[in-house]
Length: 391
Image (cartoon, rainbow, N blue to C red):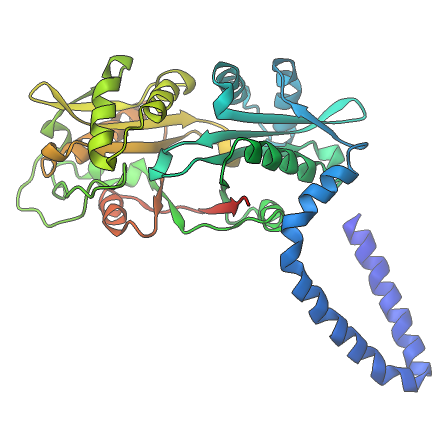
């Protein structure tokens, strides 16, 4: 439809040009009028993203009704997604819908109906403290519209519904990520008011990770930095060699470890975030397809932990990726290889599960933490992070 409209516009422009050639006095004035009009349109464009979603949602109330996603929508969601992605991701949607039923305060999931049929859906999760966050926000994980009804504003209506629900919950921002080559999604995010975030998405292909390819030579563990649950290290030179995972006894994280995790998190951040830790631990142990979160002990005492999840589906992924949500090392065990031990064992476990890539998000201001992850084999991913502040 867009191409047809463009063609008609081009034809109209050609006819106007011919008419202008016959009427010479108007020819000089037309370019000036167009030149004057163009800046006005460009100047007005930045104001549009904040207002348009809500306007479109109101205009489309007859064409697309939004409502909370229900368990009975699962088959329709999976079917729409399979057409869009070229493969089924049923297990992912089953887990996300089950998680929303189990923890409704941490999830916002909406469906859009057109002519009595499911036409689109949006899944989002509340961010409490993941990736070192200090204020609650909403992470947009999936927003999709069925192929036959795209271009009718259904995505706008879904996003406006998410925004309204987020504001009612007192959430300050929406966050998401997308591949930099996904031009359709990039246009949608720009139009709905998102801006490029200062955080960096980092990832590592396990086949090339130095902790797996060169386990006998690792950089030294780094220094803790207070105030950030993830920012516990800084790269330094090393004058010893050892297997990273030999620095501590690394095992699967269990529900019995919550008190130790709360203790370490409090020491690192200076705040009691028991609710966040409880929710994160619940997701790590119950919501992911496989259990990969780990705890490291030294002298029988928990010295550190890493919470990660392995899922297929969020942010438009079509291959399984492990995501590190939070990692902490007790200050008294700094400089003793705990962080590298956790990462190396995590990578070994992921390798055995045939998960080939691991990802995390780091604030660009956290230079020591960035240095640590680079030293551990991470690099900027082919994904960009976006944020929309809610007034």
